[in-house]
Length: 139
Length: 485
Image (cartoon, rainbow over all chains, first blue to last red; front, side, top):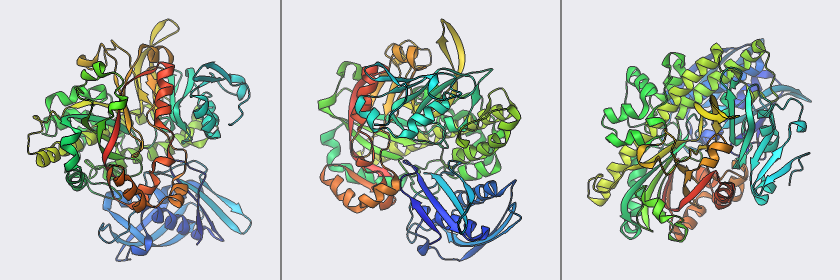
């Protein structure tokens, strides 16, 4: 797994860390971890496709806006996703093809309804082997 | 216990951290806690409350109430009042879940009448009030109706058959805060919120059937003023907020303020303390949008009350009016509001942020509904689903000391991830049922995260506020049925 949940960072909420050799892997891992907070991703089928494009001032804000888009799709369109095919250009432009399906309470093992991505400890940093992102979600 | 340089004890339960503790502190910080609660507070509370004490225009003190724990920017359980001209507004001082709050409804039923029907009632309420990830609400509205809800909250509900005439006056601010500006709300926020009117959410949100605890019926005479006349009377408590709508407004403006601070020469120690002058364009825009979310939250709790009335009618075969299902009161505990307070001998209009803190206005205040005005404002303190809750009232001392504020709940001591490692949801569900609490949860993981052991001792929190004199105990309530998102 490219991510791990952090037990003692956010008392009322959920924190996780993603490590990857490249930017695309960081964004994909962060999206997967966010999804795992909301649902057991194994129960989601990749039945429909959505394209998300995000432009931001820097890589931190690009990740913030990308994760926020996934939360918006959950609330506005009742969609959860299994797969994230991410490409990032120049750390300021992102295109992601998301594959998933409509929320089905009878079949999906649902978990927490994520409220928001916070700025606490948030960001993408250089690590020993590639990059590391820290994300704290408000639950 | 965390060692804080220079912290002194002001009274039995009040502790003060001087401005010398940290460079840039404008005012001292005050923490309300018994020695036991203070000893259990995480370092984040002390760091965050002193960061808040460093914000421009803060007045008197930055406060952390007895239930304080680490939050984003502000601690949960935080209170701060700002000068309207020189001060700031901060989404971190309100929380993403704008106007998360508590509502308490009474019934004229006694425990013996409800006990045999608790399962039927909880099962029905679980079907009637959607909870959990991505659920749709039961109120379908157009965009223009949703904007009316943003402006008029409970008033809209009462005019559209989701409430009774006297509901409006039994909600903080008369069911809607003035100053809503739907033009400052993003399309994304509306798209997240428009289908969520009438949903409970998840996390620590709940709908609970409670009974007065006869052994902790502290002031029966006072309780009668709220229609609580029996030592084993059944009540209903709702804890939820503005759902994805408020969350998105928080996210949108956190981004705006993150970029705007440079322009105003504001430096903060924590990005989650992003703020802007209240008089700035960004500050005014956020206030207008935040009020929209606050009013949506009032409406959300109101339409849930409508469903509670339907459920009781169906289960007890009596009209809701005959069951006396009146709202006792509704309080916000995540909000910033313009309020008048006495400061240095004169009355002044201030912007009071309460994040995980409850308004606790004392007797005689004109914002308290007429039937309660001479008593003080009802204060609803929600506990964990295992330990129960409290009804308190506000005091004159709260007006003098804390800008009319007190605690909001029990406050967490254990992270969600840690709680899930220790507790299994289905075992907890069985254990609670054996103790007379029937719980239905949208997910077992969510249930485990909300176990009583993950929270502080609510009685200790309430006792602290009582010793401090900033709220007064009326009655304790114990859960008998619970719906969790």
